[in-house]
Image (cartoon, rainbow over all chains, first blue to last red; front, side):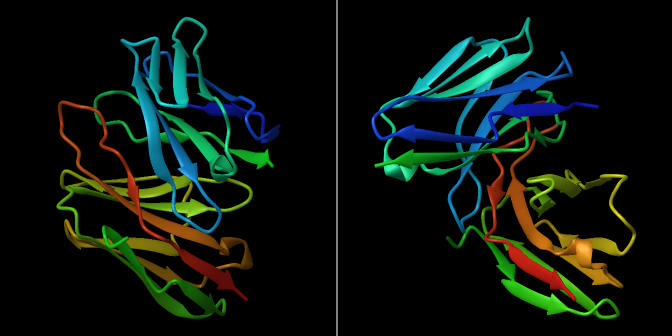
Length: 112
Length: 116
């Protein structure tokens, strides 16, 4: 089955700097990759996703890149703000109906 | 905040108790999920009810038993749990189709379970 790894497990950046979180997956057939953000004491929420026919996707300060050959994808947050502090989970699944496999999460702290 | 609700929000139980967690979704979705969130495995899928099919993670012990009476309600029945079962139990729902990707997972607030 699919296995998703995520690095780093914790990340601290200064406010205004960029943050990058990387994930690798094992099943080359996976072709849908969402990212979820979970603030302290709150539920996980989808922030961005990418499908295998796209190499990069941006939404304001957030971008995700995908390298299917290397089986890795990354989340990039630019101009980080304190409200970006949270745990971020990557996930992978097949496009047709397979359940998500989540990575172990990255705890991001944005220092003022 | 009312899309997916869970009750109770906190539960403390002994190892010999029987209790149930309840989840309700008001989004008109056709799939519901139970996840276990702990320090060891941050988001571990336990059970799925999707498109009238039940899928389960084979590693989930039989002391956890799901029930999905309709597409809006999901229960997790608990009996003779162990202290290591203490965790946050998250319910989620999504709109799935047979020919497309899994829909976005909408999570509930979770039930914080402590087993003494």
